[in-house]
Length: 53
Image 1: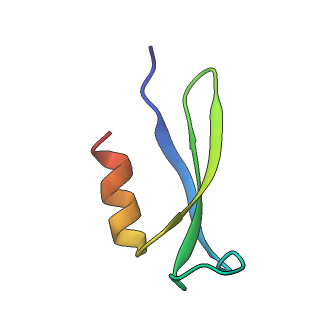
Image 2 (image 1 turned 135 degrees about the vertical axis):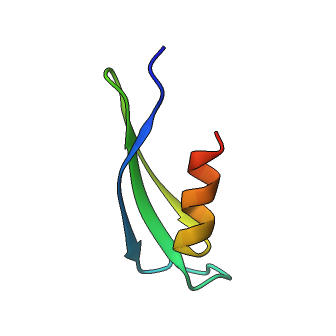
């Protein structure tokens, strides 16, 4: 199974009623699949999280 790689990360507006104001949309992909998701935190925290999986 191919490992996922970070394709992009960008700051977005926080979802309604979110307690954190820092949200990012990121896209990860491998040869067969692409996943788009949102996550709260700093860009650094999100990059570290994705690298450690």
